[in-house]
Amino acid sequence: MYLSVVFLSFFFTFLIFYKGLLKFGGHRCARASFMAASVVWGFLLIISTEVLSLLGALSFGPLITFWGIAAAGACLIYTSLHIFRSEPIAIKTAPKLSGFEVVLLSYIAFIFAATAVIALIGAPNNWDSMTYHLPRVTHWIANRGVSHYPTNITFQLYINPGAEFALAHFIILGGGDRAANFVQWLSMAGSVMGVSLIAGRLGADRRGQLIAAALAGSVPMGILQSTSTQNDYAAAFWLVSFVYYALLLMDTPKKATALAAGVSLGIAVLVKSTSYLYAFPVLLWCGYVLIKKSRAKAWLPVFIILSLALALNIGHYVRNLSLYNHPIAPEIYRDKTTIRGFVSLPLVISNTIKNAGLHMGTPSDGVNKAITGAIQRVHELMRVDIRDIHTTSHRLPFDIQFTFNEDSAGNFIHFWLIVICAAVFFIRRRYRDAPGMAIYATSLVAGFILMCLFIKWQPWNSRYHLPLFVLWTPFIATFLSSNINSKVIINAAIAVVLLSGLPWVFLNERRPLIGKDNIFSTDRASQYFISRPDIKASYTGAALIIQSKGCTNIGLSFPNDDTWEYPLWILLNRPTAKARIEHVNVRNASARYSTQYPFNNFVPCAVISLRPEEREGFILKNFKYVKEWESGPVIVLFKR
Image (cartoon, rainbow, N blue to C red; front, side, top):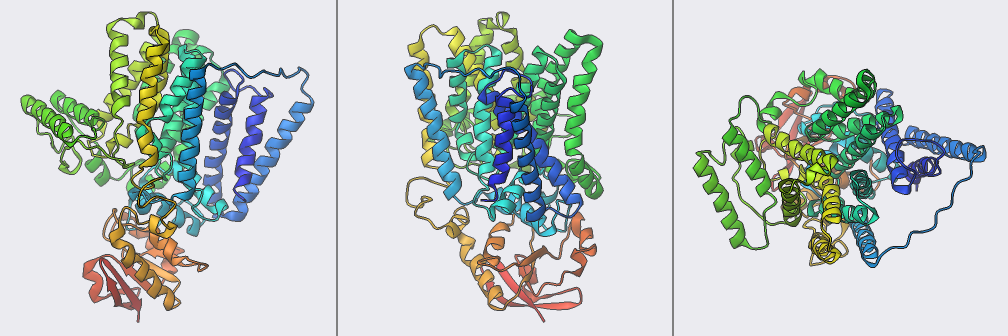
């Protein structure tokens, strides 16, 4: 109920742009107005989070007040501008759609509806969400701000927090995590609209724009991500927004468009670090075109974009600099996940092939083994270790798989559609007739290569590729609708691609619509543990024994970053208890916060430990903690 005030502020902002009462670049239509309203909404979200956090006021009262004022202000602006508007607003008649266009719209509507049901009923249960996406939000809410705190799970601190800022607003105003999955769902809906606008900028007609939208909605990884509390689709949406406004800016340089591009870029990199790599080629392209068009005046829009992007990230940079002496990540994380130092050409080729291989999985184990073997033989010919430590995180084994898992699912048909369309486009020299499309495609290829140059290969890198797959759809749609005369062939090809995405709607590994453990037959408490049923009994038992003793100050002593924390917040705060939960026995850089207020006065009455060596007990702040209960990996110690 209270969350509706957030959507009211968005709705009235949307109306302001849709009625043409304010100009924000681009033509007036519902999709362009949605993008413009999203930029304003996103800016307000980030600024309000940072400011309220500095004031120690990131809580229900200040948030409902802020969004209430934003909604009332937007309504007042819309009303006043509408009343005093001198020119009449043209009433547009609904366009007549072809049968195929109706099919495309119906498909998009189905994807939206089905994933919305999953997002609403399915509980968050992805691994990263259980370890850091959602736990960091619960700590922020408890601390009334996003400042760093002592934690055994360092991912909760330095990983880009943009998507979690939105999660915090949704959870605080929604009174729980029921609406948490909708941050990604809304990002998917916005991306589908955004790519249709990009297709229009590339020259696609209405039919081509609908094809782009439908293709974006059918990406398997995107379908899975749209119902989770990950951040990959959030990053995709803000990159789509940045690319859209960059294209507008290159066409007609305006300050307002530069502002929108800057906000979009800033939020994209605040959501996910890979956005730096994907946005860089587009930023270079935009800068080149602006210099060519405006000469000396080109500095202003570029300055606006970069300044806004920096301003929106400065809070996160400062927090990380203070703790890790680096604005993005600590040294140990960069060693594990990023490629550093000189890397030979064969190693770059290796990383590129392996990243592409993540999208080659088929339902046939035999085919997958054959493709894996072929890629291994290519590495042998190059005399490169397929698990080389310089390009492979933790020397993880390379193995092509076919999954319905949101961490590692591939986009087989979409991958080959991209490869074929791009190859035909450049081989047949279509770029001579469409230089804008050529540079657009080159920018996406460059973004992928940069990713392979800087990010080590991991089995879950396929989700990092989601923004690229989404951004490729305008190119594919424009190419197909402009270069193939037979609509029958195009319709058949698109139908195959769209149908290929449906299994990921129904068979989501963690939130299935059908099957034995579907979201309708599985209670929400059990859904949290669907990826790790082995720890459900231990976590539930630990929460019950703590609650039976009336303990509300609970310490968490965890061994590493991969420990599941969020289910404990759910169990310990049910049904009405307000437990204070803090990490103790912290052994990383964030331990310094344990000596600062308010963490220095935290004395838990019980500690949940997953460190086997602590079952013999320990001393914490001059109090002795003794084991009273143990099940599986979980040890519960009480203060004596």
